[in-house]
Length: 455
Ligand code: PLP
Image (tube, rainbow, N blue to C red; front, side, top):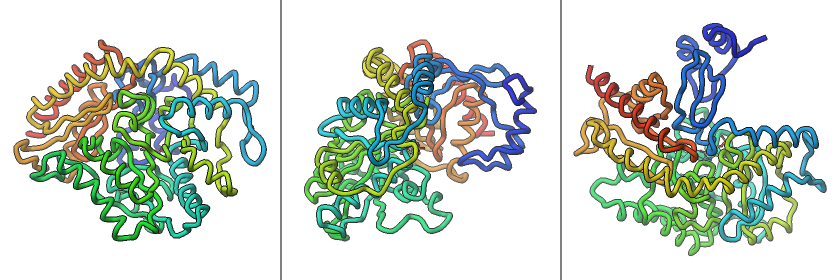
């Protein structure tokens, strides 16, 4: 049998022989060998050589409560023994789905009171595409089909959600985006703000939504979708003026507003939801990741009373085998219980985020670090050869970022590079001593990276 006790090289050989990694050039990786993670506790991963790696990315921005919480394992085991599976199609339901939907209705802001479950964020965003089009058709406006999204957005990897996404390389396989998806520019002030103040730039970028609606006709536009903070696009924190203007425009032209909170949900920004941090009143909210802290695959769309009332009048031809999976739902419920009982959101707001922020802003003292931005426990830095002009490196975009990321990895701290930005999103439970350790490792890595890049 293949076990944790096998030599690392053997595990790497087998991995390269049979396992295709997502978003990876598998040839070069197989030569180098993937790092084999064997166990994890708190903010630390352990690899097959016994190294302790500080995970400043919460896996893929998802392990909000940190690793190794037995309560979630026990909730899964209890549910698996009692009712491992049943579906929620047609006329059946079960207690974990009922209880989780009820809990989410209590927690979500405004009148977001109804949940359509999925197994992750991509599936949930596919639900949203179908749902908003079905909604407008049911209201007698079948031409309202266009969904406006943003360049560099990430909304998932399925054909529908990748179409919402604004990463050109994800459309490169052909046929994407699917029809009636339109992309406007993102509010990335550092890279694209020119001479404007962040406030002016935020307004200008939001008004591109209005221009697009006027160009296409409001009778054709169904919805706008955006991540409160663009995550995989580089942790782009919008200027303060951006979201209020987007909200105003959606209200004015009767466009449904979808907040993709797959990353920003469940404490990440210092509130339970990013919409609360930015004053957004979404009609639909996409959730996944932190909903179960990654311990089980689950996601969903939380929708307003009004959207749910219209959807109740039609049969919605859509759903997944694992919509509301009982084991995943039980794990999510236990996760939400811990977030509340252990006051994890308050911990972010009062303790972790202020301390991380203090260290994070100081990173601009490094010669390569241009802007440093942070909201809650979601942060990024822009790397540049010249801060005064916000210049780009002469090398291909992302080369310097990947060198920095690799040096971090060799120093046992996981940061992610997105082009020439470096980002973190550590577990929301991270303690002050772990925060100090994280910055010791990050600062050491950035110093080594600066000399590696000069060589
Ligand atoms: N939406 C956002 C904002 C995301 O960051 C992601 C994943 O990173 C997704 C959707 C897709 O979620 P999943 O990978 O669970 O399908």
